[in-house]
Image (cartoon, rainbow, N blue to C red):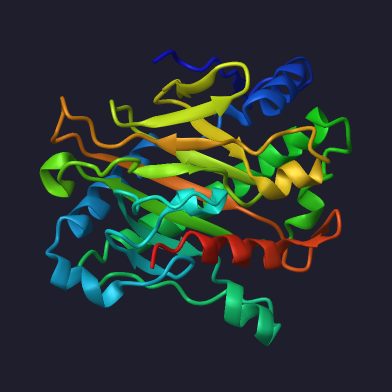
Length: 302
């Protein structure tokens, strides 16, 4: 499988000369890489270390934290099938997740009850909460930096998108992809994450390299392995962003390959930050959060 050619954008540099590459990448595949982000590698490593302790606990210990897609807690095996978002009936994704989301209330009881609920923090890994809360603050700042870059790449004012992120919703998943020694042999058409596009504005992904890793789709290259740079975040745009640009940019279609037969013990973990916008934002006549709720409901495997 060939590797996708995605540009790397350095956020420390003058954005002007880099804007054409941003535009081309988001028109073709909906993906790019960003460096110069300032997010500590040690923090990401520590989150993985602590989260791995949770994922390796017996299922009976994790079960009290079980939630459905869109909830705050543990998404266990069989909880999610991302291919459903494309209307494709697939076996459940071969992963587990710890899922968190925006929790700072707006003061609107109806909005807060759906989008700004308290997070659930597993008592078995008390070190996880301060690590994740620090990371989420850095991701909010980074997501706004990326959106400002995209506003300029689109030929608009710098704050074209961030004027709608004063009190945004977001989701954050720590995705654990165990090996075949735990999952067994994948069913036909089964992936660690099935083919889909994300639903929000931008997704910021900190990933690990592996044979059963991320692939991206473009018209020019079809399915290709995503390039890996340990210093970079992989960024893709979601459906809300594609709609915001009137279809100029495409929501990045992607999948995560099943655990490989020739590396049955391969275990990967991704930190995935899904950024959205302030509830009530309307994009080309579509109320953003009605769309988000419908899509989250669609990928619940049960």
